[in-house]
Amino acid sequence: MRFGVIVFPGSNCDHDTYHVVKEVLECSVNFIWHKETNLKYYDCIVVPGGFSYGDYLRAGAIAKFSPIMKSVVNFAKEGGLVFGICNGFQVLVESGLLPGSLITNNKVKFLSKEVTLKVNSSSSIFTRKLVPGDLLKMPIAHKQGNYQIDADGLKKLMDNEQIAFTYHQIDGLSPNGSIANIAGVFNKNKNVLGMMPHPERAADKILRSQDGLRIFKSILSTV
Image (tube, rainbow, N blue to C red):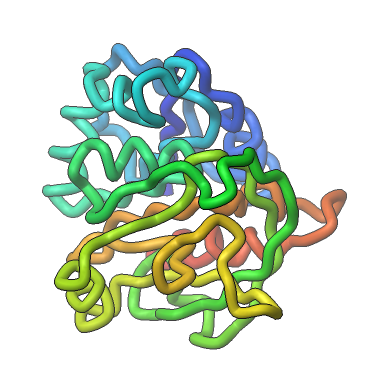
């Protein structure tokens, strides 16, 4: 399995992801500068977290115009695996690879905290090593993580089993106001995943949780 981690101006979780793939999973991985366009070498492209282009306009709104993103869209349409984390999720939504939108958190504050996720689907490459109902702990770090979609779009997500993860909160409310507590979604073909929480920050034994590693190991199970 050959991973590529895209680097935009403002990315700050690219090295975290690279570390997990290279040192923890012991897999092939390269950084891909956003001005590159050749993705033929890779099996899985990771669009990492951070603040691409400073989150000016909207988070991910400028990054979608980087040369690399046209290649990422084509890569996904041809069946390649694309994994967007936090800002990467925002970039994938802005690029049209995932449905819905990500707006400012309901309390208009940047959130940095550990959350518990519930696995909603195991019918994807990204979650095949997980069981629906499993609970995973990992951090969030975002201000525009409030996932929204219209009623028809939400029904399609549910009917097609495209909701990957939801926030599992004691009070039943998502930390950021996301509709239906959604924390991550697939595209219709389930070869693209976007999620706001950071599995790469919960994927090493020196951290408080290794739950995020289970997502990366699911990807590897395709080999």
